[in-house]
Length: 347
Image 1 (tube, rainbow, N blue to C red):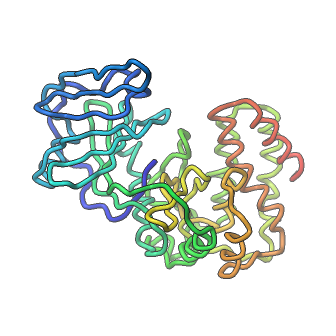
Image 2 (cartoon, rainbow, N blue to C red):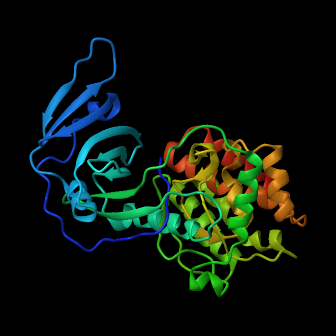
């Protein structure tokens, strides 16, 4: 989990190499919290009969060095916040009382792993509409890894679905901050990822062309399936038909908006872990099948952005398709059948 805002620093320095890069993998899934004192980490494990485990760390790593250089403070406590297939998460507490949220990836560089997330959070943050975390830095972690640091937010608890709908619509209506998007182009300043899949975002003047080449055809090529390729080509050939009479303007999108990336933050809705780009606002809801938006959300959202009736239902299926194809490419299984069914219904 993560959240964003203004980037105060970026890649450029070359921190000294850490002597110890990570705890053993079983600690990453079983530990509750760690506490660092004098280069020693005490790991409190989960489970009956578990005893704290002490691991000697040697010199501070790149994260600790950045914290010390930026805040003049030291890390006194590190608490594990879970992990994904590509990164581990932790909360750091400094000796000055400040708390930070950190993601660490062990096998991808900062530009390919975290630049897209940082820039996406910043673009959403700059709309001054919905709560996102403030990104402070991203950089190298060891010879192959990377990390990102952002403000720690108290994520959890209830929030108003109506407020989420209003704030998300306001974000979609906000004036783009990127010059290219202001000039009517679709895409983003950096390529990023959707889950673990590379997501190309090269600026494109025409929305249909962008979505055809950078979204649908991109995922179909990754799938390497003859039937998906055949049907995907047919859809791409007629994609423009679904946008007749519809004016599409570039809106900043979260890009991966499902329930796991939405939460209460001190009582108000917050969003995080984006796959952002500038696109058609309807494309935001391609993950609506697992987003749990209720009637209050839609009433508030539609109060600011009414539904474009011509071709809306078909376009909704096209936007769902991208994410089902991506899930098939990441996880396989039943997502194949759903993607195939959508394609057959459209062509």
